[in-house]
Length: 81
Image 1 (cartoon, helix red, strand yellow):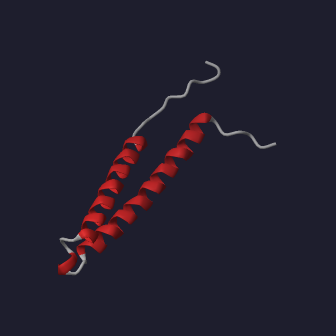
Image 2: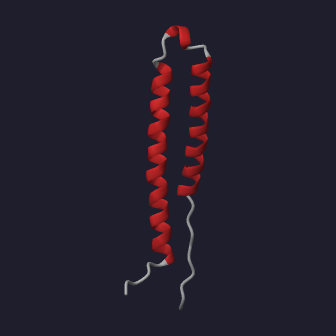
Image 3: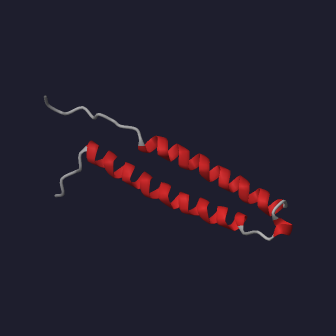
């Protein structure tokens, strides 16, 4: 029977996943920003540019929330002592 991980270890694993997912969302944001930056001139002030800007802004908000979550520390009580 495998030993269950401690709560602290499980929390550490979860925060590692947050970091990995934040990196993925940053890549998506960068791809959309690159797409927007390279739109032809006639589309730079149009609907597509606005849609991209809205999506980029949403991704930025998610990234900010994940960064806040990454910075949280939890001191788990010990069973004994």
